[in-house]
Length: 169
Image 1 (cartoon, rainbow, N blue to C red):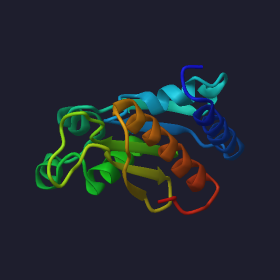
Image 2: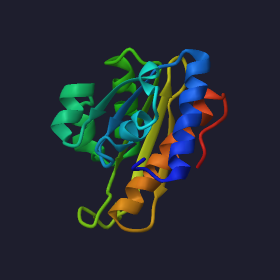
Image 3: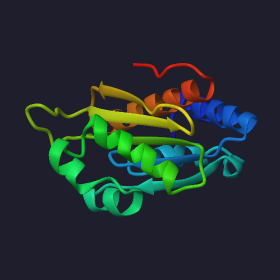
Image 4: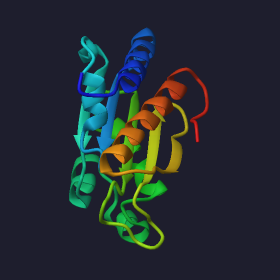
C-alpha cells in the first residue's frame, strides 16, 4: 500500500463503520488533490462505500463542480472555514453519498500569507441530517507531511461523525 500503515488502518475502520450503517462517502479535496479518496480506495472492497471524489484544486473547480459561491471565495478566501463547509455540503449535494469530507489548505512550500501560514488546513465533514463539523489545523513539516496529516485528521473526523462523536480538534 502506498499510504502509511496507520492511515490504512483508519481508512479500513471508516469503511467498516460506513458499511455497517449503509453510508456512502464523497470527498471534495483541494490541498490533498484526491489523496483522501486514494487512501480509501487503496483498501480492497471499498467500492461499496466510496461514492466519488471531487478534486477541486482551483477556485473554478470549487464553483463549477460543487457549487461553492464565487462571492464566498472572494470574501473569505479559498482556505477558510466557510469554504471548507461549503465544499463538504456541495459534495453531499452533488453525489449519492450520505457522508462527505472536504479539505482546503496550504500544503506549501509556497502560497502562504501572513495570516494563512504553510500547513494551515480547514477540514469539514458533513453527515446527512447533521450539522457540518469543522476543524482548523496547522500541520508541521513539508508538503508531504502536511498532506498525510490532513488525510489522517479527515479520516478521524469521519470516523467520529459516523460513530456519533464530535469531531476532534
